[in-house]
Length: 165
Image (tube, rainbow, N blue to C red):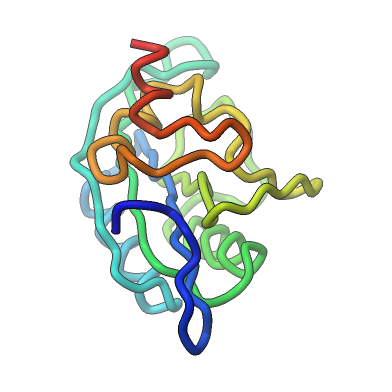
């Protein structure tokens, strides 16, 4: 899929992008489990990027490096339903529901883009408000979705990446 526009069909699937991050445990195995759980929860046509290593940013001193990946797929429900599924998967894979955002983690799943929707709710902002300032998000996402456009700026993922490298 070359763009993140909504597709028309029964169930109206929306193209979505998510980021995966972790720095505890067997990260690549955890990512594979998260992808399988997302698929079982209804995410279709999943495309997963390579895994990238990055220094911990905004974390407690001495926090180990992170592994990061991105995925795209097609989702037939609401953004809030995808957020709930992602948060449930995080808990099932060992991340406490209440957690210190500056601490190490077994898994972090962030919603980045949901078709061309802009959402500003207390628990969900789309596009992700910090994605264009994070190399560890843009690098893997640009591998699999360089031409996807952000609804707020109209910039592509590749353009956002070029602005910070």
